[in-house]
Image (tube, rainbow, N blue to C red; front, side, top):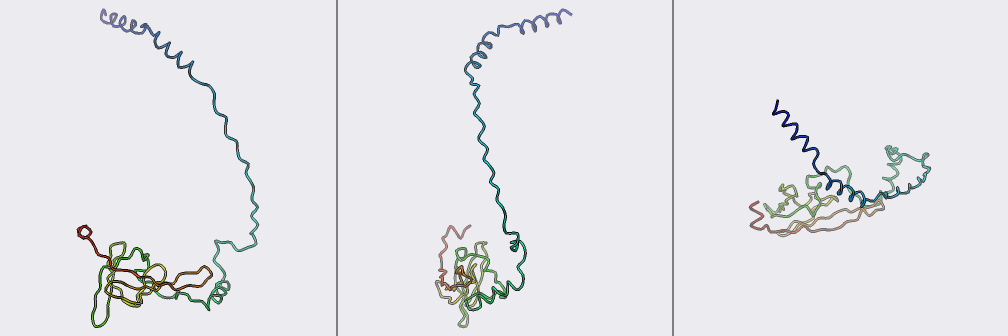
Length: 177
């Protein structure tokens, strides 16, 4: 019991220590604190916009077949790609993502070895299609491939553009990776 009484005396004397330095610090912090709060920002007024195109076709609806036919007739005199042609594997890559790595030849036919950005190697020849703009291979030589692309002109027609994919040498470091 004496031990318990001694423990209570020690604990109670700890509670009555001098806390004047703490009170001084609190007073200085309260004196230096500012109580000014910045005003709330002004609320902008909402401008109502009347949608006046209810009578027009919704952009989310499929066009009517006669509208599609009219568009085809309008473009019939222009140069355009064949929409029914089956896409080839290298038509999902941009020409800047294709690198010529070499050539193969047999019986007068020359193929170019082209590496795509996904690190796959493809064999292409004259008549193959590459690139995003219906690019058709027109010539294959030892150091380059000539591609004839069809670029949209913005008016519903297409314009031909010739592009060259050249052979690039791989460095010794690049071959190790």
